[in-house]
Structure formats: structure tokens, C-alpha cells
Image 1 (cartoon, rainbow, N blue to C red):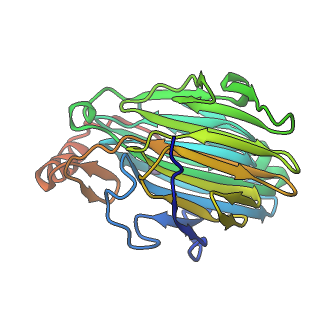
Image 2 (tube, helix red, strand yellow):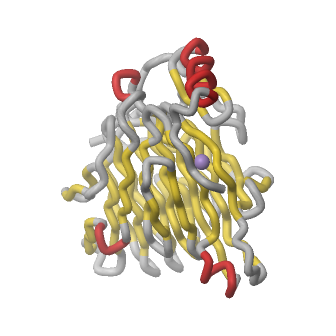
Length: 291
Ligand code: MN
């Protein structure tokens, strides 16, 4: 076994608003001008560090918009989000929950603060990841996986202080319930005070760890709150330790090694396919969703 080296510990880029409900830092691809395939199959990470929203009767959020060719995966840490899409799926993501939506051939969706959360306001903390689909799966029918914390595979770690929730793929010798279209590991690791964890991420997989809470020492680097650790693909082993406790979002996946054509809400292999997406959208092929 060989240790993976840390390529960079990235501070969160300045935040911007998505709609009026999501205040996010884009770590990639724009935030640090990374090559579009640097973290393939992951294409985009919008991280919403903790923020307090004031109470409001009318929920904040993002109105109806399309997607094709990839998946939107939303990780809830604080606050609640309601999702509706034109494939008839509806769900609420709360603390510790994950929503894994395959846009595939195309959906319209909207994402708003859940009504009760909006009325009371308070802490809000989320991340949205875009997972690219392999060319052969880009036009699959839309799919929606609601993966609550209770659905995740819970692992007590050997240090007796830390635990993990495996969302998808295999980590700590156990598999998560999430279905993916290419090999992916996604997990939340909660290090207790003085805790540590040993993660094995296949050396060919592009891998990152987002520090959601607390701070950690990861393979010789100090990683503060809200920072993203990007690894080189030069080994498997990642050792994470924390003095006062930390929550880590672990994302690791086999690169797709296919051309990327990205424009607006679409993620395809060629710009002809992007053009086709706009044509199909105008022709009503993404279905109907009321605002
Ligand atoms: Mn969206």
C-alpha cells in the first residue's frame, strides 16, 4: 500500500448566489480554473458553507430549469430543501440526507427551501455535486434516489471515536446503497475528538475530501473548515486525523476519459449534442413542471 499525496488544500472561492436560496463557493471547475476533466467523473462542486437565512413565508430557491447528461447530487448538512422534477419525483433533503438525481435524457427540476424550514429560518449548509455520465448512459431515463442518513451504511471506525456513513461505493470494507453509472465512492466520515481514519481510495480514482466541519490533518497537510483537499493519483492510502473533531465528505471516482462538452445546464460529449439538447428542450421533450 502506498500513500496518496496531497496536491492542494483549496480555500473556498468567494460565494455567489444560485437563485436566492443557495449561497455557494464553486470549487470546480471554475473556482480554480481546473481542467474540466481533472476530477472526472465529478464535473462541478458548489459548496454552501453555513449561513443563516431569516424566516420567510415564500421559500427561497431556484425555479424550474433543465438538465441533461449528468447527475445532480445534493448533500444536506443543515436546513431542508424540497425538490420537484418533471419525471414526477419529489423529495426533501434534510440534515445528513443525500438526494442523487440522474437527469439522464433530461428533466426539468426546481429546488427550494422546504416550507417549514423557510418559515423558521436558521442555519443552512449544503453541497451540490455534478456527476458526469458515461457516454453510453447519458440518455438513460431520469432516476431519483433519496438516500437518507438512515439508509446509508453506518460504520463504527476502529479508533472507537469516529464513524462513517457510506453513501455509494465501497469504503471501510462495506458498500453504500447509492446506485451509480460509473465506479464512485461517496461517504461522510465523522472524526471524533482525537479520532482518526484510514481510507483506501483506488489510486486511479480522482479523489477529494471536503472539510465540512472542524479541521483535520490529512496525509501530512492541515485542512481547515470549508477547504477542499485534492489528491494526486499516486497511491491508495489516506490517513485523516483530527484534534477537536471533523466532518469530511469523501468523493472518489474512476475517470471517464471521454470528451466533455459543457454548456449551461447540459453536460454532453459534443457541442452537436448540446445543440440537440436545446432543440429537444424547445420541443417539450423534457416534460412539464409548474413553477
Ligand atoms: Mn439544478
